[in-house]
Image (cartoon, rainbow, N blue to C red):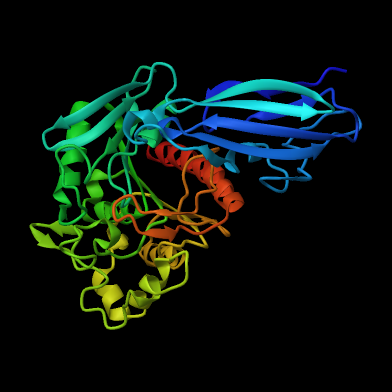
Length: 428
């Protein structure tokens, strides 16, 4: 028999899993599969795993666990999420470049033979349009579906890295949503720092979105990650009439200071958000127990969560900075892992659920054991757990394991799409 490899489907959206199947190997022989993918900025990512061929001479990672390699256990997309950077980027990783298709070459070797096949993961489906927005004070990028509207809308907010989350917006548009990747710092026309961001900016941006795009049933969901997760809850509590649904990834239950994204001249305890021209109280304001010592002097890799846990011990400070989530009238979906290295998001989500359910509000939760702070969309490498913060440059861990983070990526995205579908039907 001739060694062959097939990938089904070969070309599809990034959130679609693939079946990789090898045939023609000698029964019981070792079969090595190498996956080599294009990454942001021209980087190259690679993973390898060796399997034992079955009695028919076949290998299927969706059925078979590798005997050794870059991941363990059965995982149809293990050769993607377990990839490590093999070659560094040759150009900037941000902006539209990050919405490029991910092309993967898969090579299989067994018994002196070799076979190759390829697959392409698409972020922006054919016909999806991209428009840069810098008008009426709004800084963002609008992605629109290829199909005729009207479409429901979603606003996507980044975390403390700032900028605009174009990959997520492109994927939402590919799934039928008018998607606005909205910047609020480190974006054209805006500050380089997260300090003193007015909540009125988001109210006005929502107004622009509704005036500029014909939205199905006036539906506007809002989603954010990390500081963006804190922010979407804060926006929905401040302007409940403007929000139709909330998807908060690894959020906080209270307002935080600028931390690693603020102007260094003002320090990490400076204010982040303002309302009516006044800074909102944050967790470190008058905090009697908080100290950054466990983070600054703690073991490597540094874990920001340790400092924030000391601040959370001051219940009075927590209450002063608490986001009034009971004021949110839209359905809320919380997404978190249990090993978040950035802040104690599992505890924060407990507090949010308790407060919202006590007020009779609609809140759901996707909680992933052993996952960390970086919960993204499916089928991307999850091996970078310790990294430099994009603003401060401080190296710390986001927590979790590659396998747990990969599971959280896949299941949370499916859960978000299901949540959006259900809440729209309920409103219809």
